[in-house]
Amino acid sequence: MNAKLHDPAPPFDIVRIRADFPLLSRTVHGKPLVYFDNANTSQKPRSVIEAVDRHYREHNANVARAVHQLGEEATSAYEGARDRLARFINAPSRDEVILTSGTTQSINLVAYSYALPRLKAGDAILTTVMEHHANIVPWQLVAARAGATVKAAPIDANGELIVEKFFELLTPEVKLACVAHVSNVLGTVNPVREIARECRRRGIPLLVDGSQAAPHRRIDVQGLGCDFYAITGHKMLAPTGTGALWARRELLEAMPPFFGGGEMIREVRFDGTTFAEPPHRFEAGTPNIAGFAGVAAAIDYLDGVGFDAIGTHEQSLLDHATSALSELPGIRLFGTAAGKEPVISFLLDGAHANDLATLLDLEGVAVRSGHHCAHPLMQFFGVPATLRASLAFYNTHEEIDAFVAALRKVSRLLVAP
Ligand code: PLP
Image (cartoon, rainbow, N blue to C red; front, side, top):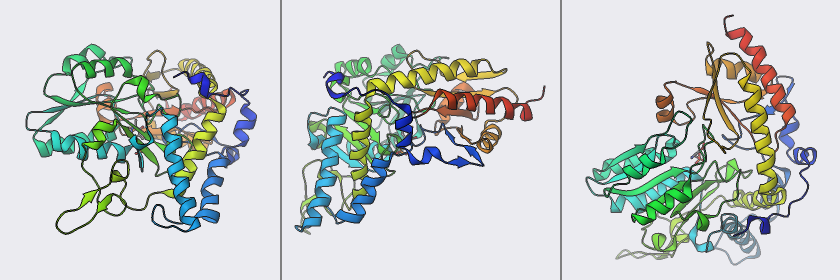
């Protein structure tokens, strides 16, 4: 599918865009906020905040259980979000899109409903060293129950997956392969199409963790050729507690429910309950209806800006930040892959990441420090933690200059001359 057909390509007006995000104009510790923790969670435009607010003010009711007007409005907001998500990732059918609370739930659903019933002792799941714990721990939990193992493909010093090694590890015992589309620590973009082609050739389903890709690039699950794709709403302007899992229809149809309860059944009897078809089979209980009203508004907002414009601006921010940071004495950058997304992990010699992040906060700069839910990656680089500046399309070059100036200032307090 041609992405340009979707993008209306309006002019990229950063002043207008920033004015759409109320939180960006606040101060922190008396300084203008520089929010560079977007890979953790993004800020929300007014249209998303208003969609949630409007839902509770005007449409609040439960979904799929009431024939009254409000019930219909709530159901149409919720199901409308499914339509928007299906188009957003170019899913062949809305019925292949399960609405979840985020990537963590999406991956656990695949772990317990797809992987666990299929895994036998001696089987394996293949993932990579650069994954978020959400794409490691669920596999370890189900593998342990089945007597299976989890293998991890290595990366190189630039933070790029060693693809040949990944393919070498795709042995017949592997029953599922799982990779991040984009690393939350390094910004590395994995060659998902190539990986999917090889997995398909070997008959191994591929799950892609798209949490860090969806905020930055147009997703086309059909073009990628994967089997499962997980996204989380709160990193792409939507409310927390929203997300989706896309899976091929034939896989979903063969998957038993993971959660049981209301809305996922056809008929409940004590001599045998039958279940709804996907996607509702996997959506037990009352969902985050207002949150999904916000998801639809978030996708409208992203589409309105356009991923071509987002990509161009973010790459220019990344280039500027990388070259400004590179001039700092004692800097060590983690993740220098070509074509990466705007996530920069780094350390300064002689200063602990948490100390730097705490002092940067006093300067109004929000960055994350720690292991970023990626212990194996930290172990690979031999460090306990890094600082991470993760950028979004609403950030500016001036903010990067303010961040680097603040970093110079606070590092003088910590790093012995
Ligand atoms: N996968 C990646 C790559 C992430 O960056 C994150 C969040 O940081 C997750 C999974 C988990 O997402 P959530 O906590 O929204 O379920």
